[in-house]
Amino acid sequence: MQIGIIGGGLTGLVAAHALARDHKVILFEKMPYPGGCLSSYHINDYWIERYYHHCFSSDVSLFSLLEEMGLFEALEWRNGTTGSFARDTIYPLSTPLQILRYPELSIQDKARLGWLTLTAKNASLADLDDIPADQYIIENLGLNVYTSFFEPLLKSKFGDRRKEVSAAWLMSRIAIRSNRGVEGERLGYLRNGFHTLIDALVTSVTQKGGEIRLQEPVSSVARNNNRWTLNGIPCDAVISTIAPLELERSGGPALPPIPYQGAACLTLAMKRQVTNGIYWLNMKDPAPYGAVVTHTNFIPFERYGEHLVYLASYFSGTLPPRLDERMLSDFCSRFSVQPEEISWHRMAVDPFAGPVYTTGYRSLIPRYETSGLYLAGMFSQTNYPERSMEGSIRAGFEVAECLKKREQHE
Image (spheres, rainbow, N blue to C red):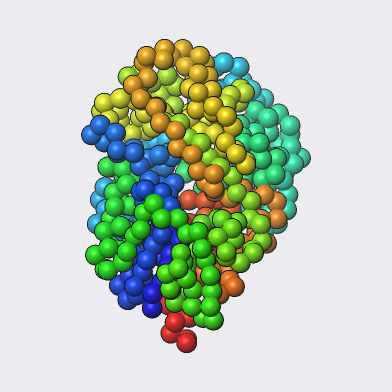
């Protein structure tokens, strides 16, 4: 069979890797590089992801893929420290003792927060899908716990849409990030960057005879009987990994309107770090970004020769005007950085960076085979109620297996 795959992100590449041995695969990617949100910049003599990334100890499908690609030995584990920027002050929040010292929460607030962390892994996500996260926290832990602790987290991930997010997402997030020791959260990273995984998948697909067409967005999707055409190219089956709304605009079927948001991530380099050694700093104070993620407070500075910082912002619709300038100006002012201290900066923007896990999202998740198409990506069941590399890898393998079973049945 000739299989067309729309989208060269992690799910699309994994599906192509799984199918290319036995089928002719043609993958279409609109950007000039593969990897989607897991793509990287090549700066000086190193690679750095366009959007910050790390993995978790529960990511078994990722580990299996790394083994298959010969990359597992490059996986290393480090402590990811967290904090909050509140009232012009950086507060570390990585350890139980630091949380106890956090002045924005009372003793009672901290006790309620501890209870929530202990019970998160046993929460029924199905029961929480229709409950807004802010409502759940306010009713169960109080308004101050929400505004002082959880609202900055929701803001950093979902921006202005944070009040639409379900409690299922929040409790899943708490559960997956509860792997903490006395020094902070245990997170994983590939020693030479995740671009090595993307490169390995690209090599696997092309060595098996698959074709990856960069800078070729799919603008035309059409079906004639049981065959499809993508940009006029005949295909026996099609896997789409892009946002369903984007697929519909190209001629695909109308599907339930899965809500998506855009991401704007400004990466900058400088010779000193300004977040007191904290990797992930959520902004409680108003700012044109929701989080400051200092990559070199997680991965050693010596690998790059300069400190690397991400300023993360999410948006709906169109990108706010001059956002990169406003982010950079605010960062310099807020953290006492002179503009000449920044050696380079680049802005990555994706208007369909990922789903917003709104209340009722669970009912919108499409099956892998829908309206004669195969659909998999960040909107899939494997990425509910939190998107991750793990969920995207699972979606890629599972949709490939679904297609294979249908072929065998026919």
